[in-house]
Length: 96
Image (cartoon, rainbow, N blue to C red):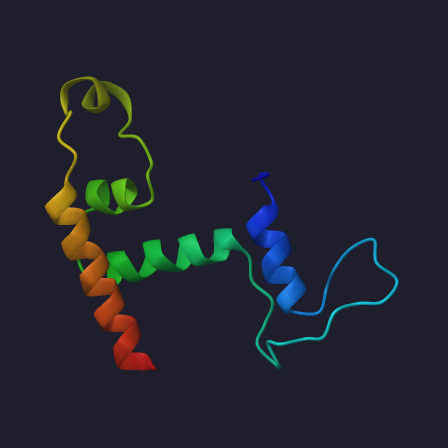
Protein backbone atom coordinates (compact mmCIF):
# COMPACT_ATOMS: atom_id res chain seq x y z
CA UNK A 1 0.00 0.00 0.00
CA UNK A 2 1.38 3.38 -0.96
CA UNK A 3 1.69 6.35 1.36
CA UNK A 4 -1.31 8.08 -0.22
CA UNK A 5 -3.62 5.07 -0.76
CA UNK A 6 -6.12 5.93 1.98
CA UNK A 7 -6.31 9.62 1.04
CA UNK A 8 -6.93 8.67 -2.59
CA UNK A 9 -9.67 6.24 -1.53
CA UNK A 10 -11.33 8.95 0.59
CA UNK A 11 -11.09 11.45 -2.29
CA UNK A 12 -12.70 8.93 -4.62
CA UNK A 13 -15.70 8.76 -2.25
CA UNK A 14 -15.96 12.54 -2.63
CA UNK A 15 -16.04 12.20 -6.43
CA UNK A 16 -12.44 13.26 -6.93
CA UNK A 17 -10.02 11.03 -8.79
CA UNK A 18 -7.02 12.90 -10.24
CA UNK A 19 -6.00 11.94 -13.74
CA UNK A 20 -9.42 10.65 -14.82
CA UNK A 21 -11.57 12.44 -17.31
CA UNK A 22 -14.78 11.00 -15.91
CA UNK A 23 -14.95 11.53 -12.16
CA UNK A 24 -16.59 8.95 -9.87
CA UNK A 25 -19.89 9.77 -8.16
CA UNK A 26 -19.81 11.74 -4.91
CA UNK A 27 -21.01 9.37 -2.16
CA UNK A 28 -20.30 11.89 0.60
CA UNK A 29 -22.95 14.49 -0.21
CA UNK A 30 -22.31 17.94 1.29
CA UNK A 31 -19.76 16.67 3.81
CA UNK A 32 -16.56 18.74 3.68
CA UNK A 33 -13.63 16.86 2.11
CA UNK A 34 -11.18 15.45 4.67
CA UNK A 35 -7.97 13.42 4.76
CA UNK A 36 -6.51 10.77 7.04
CA UNK A 37 -4.47 13.50 8.76
CA UNK A 38 -7.70 15.37 9.56
CA UNK A 39 -9.03 12.24 11.28
CA UNK A 40 -5.84 11.87 13.32
CA UNK A 41 -5.92 15.56 14.32
CA UNK A 42 -9.58 15.26 15.30
CA UNK A 43 -8.83 12.21 17.46
CA UNK A 44 -5.96 14.05 19.18
CA UNK A 45 -8.15 17.07 19.90
CA UNK A 46 -11.00 14.94 21.24
CA UNK A 47 -8.57 12.96 23.39
CA UNK A 48 -7.32 16.20 24.94
CA UNK A 49 -10.92 17.31 25.55
CA UNK A 50 -11.60 13.97 27.28
CA UNK A 51 -8.65 14.52 29.61
CA UNK A 52 -6.37 11.89 28.09
CA UNK A 53 -2.77 12.57 29.20
CA UNK A 54 -0.64 13.90 26.36
CA UNK A 55 1.85 11.03 26.39
CA UNK A 56 -0.99 8.49 26.12
CA UNK A 57 -2.71 10.39 23.30
CA UNK A 58 0.57 10.55 21.39
CA UNK A 59 1.01 6.79 21.78
CA UNK A 60 -2.56 6.32 20.51
CA UNK A 61 -1.38 7.99 17.31
CA UNK A 62 1.64 5.66 17.31
CA UNK A 63 4.02 8.56 17.92
CA UNK A 64 7.24 7.78 19.76
CA UNK A 65 7.97 9.46 23.07
CA UNK A 66 10.61 12.16 22.68
CA UNK A 67 14.01 12.79 24.16
CA UNK A 68 15.25 11.05 27.29
CA UNK A 69 11.74 9.82 28.02
CA UNK A 70 11.91 7.56 24.96
CA UNK A 71 15.11 5.98 26.27
CA UNK A 72 13.84 5.19 29.75
CA UNK A 73 10.09 4.71 29.33
CA UNK A 74 9.53 1.41 27.50
CA UNK A 75 6.00 0.84 28.82
CA UNK A 76 3.47 0.34 25.99
CA UNK A 77 0.48 2.07 27.72
CA UNK A 78 -1.85 -0.54 26.19
CA UNK A 79 -4.60 -0.33 28.82
CA UNK A 80 -4.37 3.47 28.94
CA UNK A 81 -4.60 3.65 25.14
CA UNK A 82 -7.59 1.33 25.12
CA UNK A 83 -9.33 3.53 27.70
CA UNK A 84 -8.47 6.67 25.68
CA UNK A 85 -9.96 5.16 22.52
CA UNK A 86 -13.06 4.11 24.46
CA UNK A 87 -13.50 7.63 25.90
CA UNK A 88 -13.16 9.28 22.48
CA UNK A 89 -15.54 6.73 20.90
CA UNK A 90 -18.12 7.46 23.61
CA UNK A 91 -17.74 11.22 23.04
CA UNK A 92 -18.28 10.77 19.28
CA UNK A 93 -21.23 8.41 19.83
CA UNK A 94 -22.90 11.06 21.97
CA UNK A 95 -22.72 13.47 19.04
CA UNK A 96 -24.15 11.10 16.44
